[in-house]
Each structure stands twice: as C-alpha cells, then as structure tokens.
Image 1 (cartoon, helix red, strand yellow):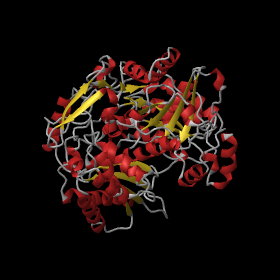
Image 2 (image 1 turned 120 degrees about the vertical axis):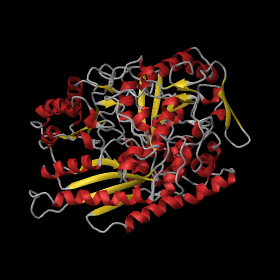
Image 3 (image 1 turned 30 degrees about the horizontal axis):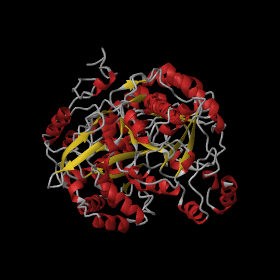
Length: 620
C-alpha cells in the first residue's frame, strides 16, 4: 500500500515531519462519507506553506462542511522528491496519504511568481497532465484551481489551470465546491462544469477566453466565449466580522517561518503607495471590530497553545481602534504570558500612546518601510511620510528603549536618480545619529540599523503598471553605489537578488506566451526558483531562447495607456482612469491624500455595494 511505502522512506529524508501529517488540530475524515475531496497545495516547502494564513482559513472552512474534506499538500524538498521518483511514489496529501489523482479538486495558492515551476512539478509528481487541454472531458481527473494575489495576472499559467479564483475565497470557494458536487451527481462533463463555474462571480476559466495578438507582440483582443463574462470581477467579502474564521490552527511538529497565532484585523490599505500591488488589490478597506478580534484570537491561542499573537494587516497601525484593541488584548495576553506583535507599523502613526502600549509587550526590533531615501522620490511613490516623521519616530523608539531598527527601501523606482540611491544611506545614517544623540541611551549598548533594499517591479493593478523596470545591470550598479557611499558599520544592507527580480518582473507582467516558457524551464530542471541555492538561471535563459521570447518586451519597455494589458479582463475594482491619474501625478512628484483624509475615487468600493470602511464620518 502507498501508506506503507511512504512510511518506509521517511527515515531517509531530512525533516520527515514535513510529510507525516498527524499534527494537533489536523482534520481526518472517513473518505467513504465525503462527497468532495480538496487537496490544498502550497507550491513551496512545509515550513513556508504552514505559515500562510489563507491556507489556514480555507482548510478550516472546507472542513467545516461534513461532506467535504480538505487536506494539505506541500512541495517536497529535493531529497524527498528524488526518493519519490525512484520509488514511483505519487504526490500525496498529508492527512490521508492518498495520491492527488484520487481527489476531486487540486487547488494551488499563488503567493509569488517564482513558485510557478513548482506548480508544474507538483502536478507531474501527482501524475496529472500539466495542461488543461490534456485532461479530457471527464470529472474523474481532478479540477485544477488556483487563487492568491498572483492571480491578478493569471495569464502566465493560463494553459495549466482549469479555473482561477479571483479575489477572496471564503464565499466563492464553497459556491465552487457546491457546484462541483452537483455536477458530479448529475454526471456532467468537465466542459459543462467549467462553463457553469465561470458564471460564479470571481471564477475565471481561461480556456473560455481567446487571445489574439498584433504584429508587434502586444495583445489585440481578449474575447470571452461560451457565455463567460467579458471581465471577471474580483470577489470581495463584505463583512469581516460575520465571515468564517478558524477556531483552530494546525500546529506543526517542526518550526515554521511564522510559528504563532495570526489574526487578520482588516483588509486593504488607506495609503495608496503607487508601487504596492497588495495595497490596491485588497481594497476596499474592511475592518474587524475589537470584540471579534479579541474573542477569535483568544480562542485560537487556547486551541493551539501558541505564546505569540501577531496582528496581521498591510498597515497595522492604520487600524482605527488600534490603541483600544491593544488594551483589550493585553487584558488577557499579559496574564497568559502571550506576546503580542504588530508587524507593518507606519512611521507616521507611531504615536506616544501606541509606544506606551507596545512597551508592555516583549520588546523586539522595530521595522519601518521608508521605501525611498529622498523626499522627492517618496512623493513620487506617494509614501506620504517626511524625513522628520521618520526620524521623530525612531527618536521615540530609542527613548523607549529600542536599539535595533529595520528600514525597508527600494531601488529602481520610476524617476530615480543616483542622488535618490545615495539618499538611502544618508537617511539610514541619520537614524543611527538619532540613537547616539539620545541622552538616555542604554549604557553599553549600540544601535543597529538594518536596511533591506529590494528592487522595484512594476506590478499589475497599480499606477506604475505601465512603467519600465530597470535592467539587471542598472540594478547591480545602484546596489554597488549604495555600498560605496556607506561609511559606517552600524548600517548593514541586505539586497534582493537582481536575477530573481528579473524573473519576477517577467511573470508579473507577462501574457499566455509565457506558458511555453514555464514548461520549457521546468523540463530544464527549474524548480524552487525563489531559493538562492536552488535557482537554475541557465535553465531559464535556455527556455526563453527556445521559445523565442525577448524578456525586455515584458520588463524594460514603457507601455502606453492605449495598450491592452494581459490582465485587463480581470477587474480588480480599481478603475483604470484612477491608475492613470495617479501615474501622471507621480511624474510630477505630486502626492494624493490617504483614504481617510479624502477619497481619491479609486472605485474599489463598487465591488462591495459602495461600502468602504475608510469612508466614514471621521474623515478630515
């Protein structure tokens, strides 16, 4: 039996607990009493996938239905994959250790573009045909679905995925599975099911859309067929207080990246940073109430045994009742010795009151996203923070006893000059100076400033989606310029690999022609492309050459407003006219007020019946 074979090989691999299942709060059902089996696949290792909040939510949601069973699947590491291929072990789910081909649905979450070859590898290990067209017209082969933030541009994977779930899945997922359950009972064909599924708001079936091209390689048209909508609306959950949230998290046997209770306190972002895809994609703003957050967090802490609670959002300190929330949480977390962490703090929202509340929890380093080193460039990207606000915030933190600060920056931003790059180092040095200028600084302790410097990729659904990327050579030159301009050991720089940025840019901005490239790269041995020690760059270069793809077409050219973009038939809710206005303002270094100060008319609330929690009587 397959289970016995799996058991026999586990002692031969590193971290066998990645593949055993059986963790606290994992769900095992009698498959004879189940109508729909769902394999939730994370195309990376167990430690990364088990940190993902979306998987935790949908795993519990699907399993809340007595006749549905959701199981977890992760990409096996290279040692396990080698044994699986040698022993002819198909990819299996952790809870039952059944092969994926025995499931009704195989679903992938796409969190980053460099996981795409792992999707193909997992399908291959599962012995499921890679391309949708090769899976026949029966529902006996699992339906392959995908969701997550990368599906704002699903086209590079369009030939491999039967249906994409665009937007938030809590309601859409159950509607999709209920339709599949009905289709199987009525003995419908695969094609009949997919045509019906395309009528569910948020479901995109790429095989129902025909793409034609101009002679210059740009898209001429995207045409919907068989009753599919011309544009697919992103699905939005209206009320976070009433929507499903887990009472239990699966507790892993091995340490994972984020090993703690995670609670999402609101979705969306009021700030409108022009480079930030997540900030626009997750709009409109929707907040949970304090009572709901506290009640659900306490329940999760009790059922999991974790001693840390992380409040999750794109900008935690923008939660309107953050101080009230901390008071409520600290009322039970301090007696229970549970640490509360607040990632994603905004520099201009780090108030004295918030600092006092944070002083009651276990102290760690503070992280702030300054993004750019000069005020001009911060205005271009609409960061809406001044240098004085940055320094004042760090000053408050140092007075409060903090000694370590992490700053996040980007290079390669639109209109960037060398002075802007050097400004990153100059601003970091000013932060160091704030520490040593503090008369009450702790004796015998120094200050450390860690500057993480990533490379800008113009992402879909942002005001910069038409902008060109810097070349790899230019990004490397700017990294070297930054290092050479640094004169202190108090500042350490961490750079993102420019080769990985280049691949990310191609697939973030690409079209269906890249399906052939991904498959060719996979056949060249490319997997785990986001891992520095596993990336096979030559395999990718050979794949682009074989498929006749000029990568500069996707990365290094500016696109006109008239061009049909590969993702234009996906409606994120953000109007194109708004994105154009913001792009033009960026060219003039003009800022836009954040959503609670003045509505800029992005249009996202139309997908939520006109409701947005940023629009309130508290606007100033």
